[in-house]
Image (cartoon, rainbow over all chains, first blue to last red; front, side):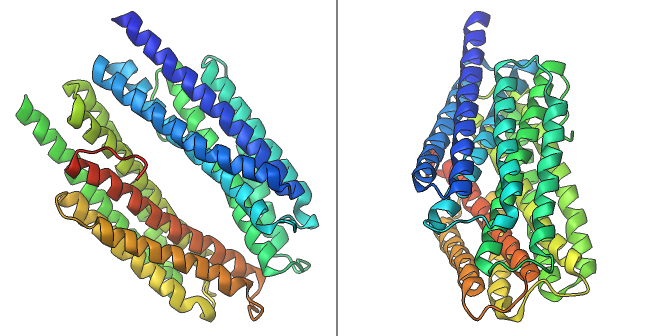
Length: 216
Length: 216
């Protein structure tokens, strides 16, 4: 019975890793689409985000079946509840990357990124991809310690997010309202994406330390 | 044993209703603060949003304890998993209302709402409050049918959200970038708030029909 349960837990973990890989791929495409007005990549990212949602829902169903069959308690129960929450975060991350791609799609053949914000969004996009990669590693191998790196990169994304407003609200911002709207939303989506990585890493750190810090 | 479990389920439900009432209260204060540059109400909304997060986390802990003690299966298990998801949505709704209040706080003593968008945000705010009230009723009394009204009101919020961009992107939009940023984010927060109400009503409709439609 314990062996069956361990196999089921491994299955849950494998699927979480697959979804995290898919989210990394979606963000990579979305960021490139956004920076380079690439409508093909944008469409790919949007389609992958939809598929990602279904994968997350299928994983939730698997977790509920395991809960029903195994009636786990203590740590095992918390691992499975954590999996539900991690799945919800990964689903949102895919959706947020899809929203970034949709902005590129909507502005095509124009660009959604004014030159004055290009380097900011390049850095934000590559940080988000890097964070998604780190969270994939963390889910695959829960005994690695990436929490500090993840927190530092999230702090940098927050800083860039605030920097977007500094640029947009400065006297020399001459772009039209369309650009202002696009960069405001795109920056928010990048920032929320990174927030979810921090939330997931908090859940995973529980799995290794056995301590349940919801408020960390 | 069954009776104990029923009491625990009732406790979970009562707490969800209390959190939904608190979220309604937060959105009411946030919307008024945003529309009337009322910094006192804004501070109240922000403080209540923080308390709301802790209540949602405490509810999650209760649900996990019930799962551990009762090892529910079938419908009972799904009710408890739904409670976790509803709690996550209510927590986000409180946070989104807090973000709206924070915009008002940040612009004080100025206004975050340009006159050209006042009626739009008045309607969005009152729809969000109305939606929060409906979801409270739905959680208190799961056999009422409010799904259609909720969907119609959410559709109207989406329409108003798109309308904000129509106004901001029109040739006669003369407000500065600060207003453009504020109304873009505020509109997004109002829209996401309503989305969560739809998500919760989908979960509750499962509790009454016994059908689990994640994709509805």
